[in-house]
Length: 365
Image (tube, rainbow, N blue to C red):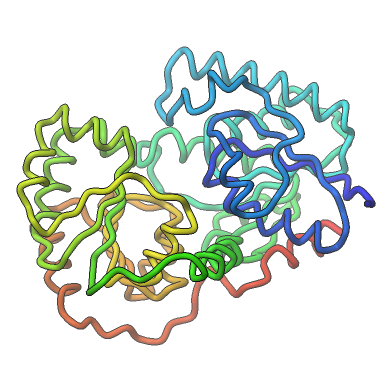
């Protein structure tokens, strides 16, 4: 098999999900690629479910996988510096034409961006940042992702935006290659949903799907109290596949009992991506503080209440399907509207159409 001379650097499950379409498109063209894993999450199960190869290089041992979150600590800083040096060594040895990385995590985007611009000023390869141009407009919401996005865009050579709005945020980089290709989640969600339909059955009756895990919410007792109050105002059956860190936080704040006392709320263990996408596609509406789920809500035309102060995915707010607030009364008011039969008007998905991975490879070719 001919090699594409492309290295793809990934640290988390979310990054892998967004990069899977590129991996699959390369293999459909009978071209191999290098898969470099920084080790933030254990990706083996997700690789298997998507049918892509496991990493060629893993920069951390299994004992460190999943050790770090989005919090900035001395340990994460040291780990990140070590990751930068390891990435530099591997990339130099591979001598690729392109290094693709995704998103805004400390462990991957920051490491690759800084490695490219600071540690290798005379590099021969070009760095490609997927999901360039996302901006919340606040350094604190979320921290440190907003800072990382700016650094990644600043030091990357090719900036692939997901929408006209995100491309507009990159106008100052006139000396770089900037293109609006759309969002690879369009391809990822379709791949996962088609597979999920073969093995999963729809939940009986209508249900609301809940997903809460953002660090800026979890670290605040006040915010979590507001979130629980808003969730408990939902009249429909609600399913909450819960992250371990979210469950632990709710227990520490004494809020888990309030949720358990509500017969409408069903808390389950975290599910895999394919099953989760199946649940998104068949739910009544979504309540979340996540990022990609805002994009997935538009793909499956599901209303989505975003429990955050700000979002870097502002395109969805103009579609009439995405709503954002951390105010309890406003949240309850939105929930009340969503509990009725909300009219979903026609809209053009700001993240484009399927086939994004093909556009990306054509640009690189």
